Length: 365
Image (cartoon, rainbow, N blue to C red; front, side):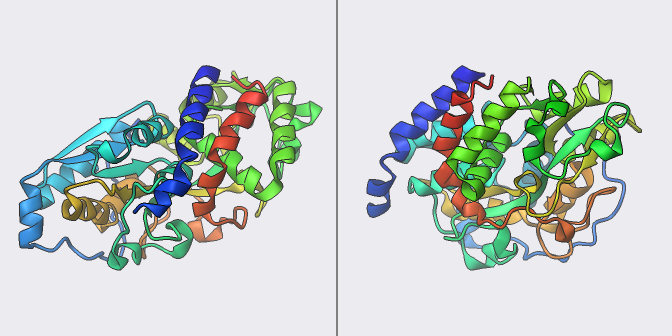
């Protein structure tokens, strides 16, 4: 795991160093839907000569999202538009971002669909994303899209403290991630340090608290015998099984487990408003600038924000939809009531390389 972090850091260090020059030279599915979405209809893809021509070419999507999450939407898009789609799945968003950074202008990809805003922001900083049209950007509030208009949020997810109520009492529940370095959490907490969402969370901590405080926190949880996992799902499984007291994950993993298993011994706890641990992130999609299939790529991104696709994300995956009228996932706090740190998600990309370095420096594996 640590070698993967160091590899990502090396790729980012080598390629993001060229960003200044480039700027000058232009997860397991759950049960089927059980309720109807009340979303407001987004604009339908227009039938045009340009789109028809684009449909003759295969659209290539690099997806940092789980294949089971993506496949139903991709199939529905092809059925609706006639545009065939080939999806490349790597070992998560960070790996695909590294591949894209390495490919640069030679990439065959048309769309990058990322797990979080930090990594797609890194692609944009490298000059590899096109500007999205205003009618696509306007489907999502400014808080969940790129400040420069190069990527748009598809869904939102909140970081949470998931815990087993048989092992953690109500009066023990932390209000801040900074409490997790205290002795009472020794050996009781799980994290996924190489996961893209965790790295983005660390980037947010750097943005709000600074490098020194972030390294101190990472070293603090390492010294507190933090348990490390390959992904969020494994953390939730361990909490449910009673093998782990608590963990830091994205909110929807527990909800998906509940949909599969019914009642389980785990609860999502939201940290205090404004705390870094309450970070709300957007999955994001953008059109690759080198793409020769720009029109079809835009239509794909637009489709991700259609009522049909947004219903899939909220009802089946328990993520937050971002278009107007999206329903709240069952049993979940409404998105409007969540309050993470006051940051611009577009800024997270600036801290990615440093975050990966700090995670490795703290000895997390």
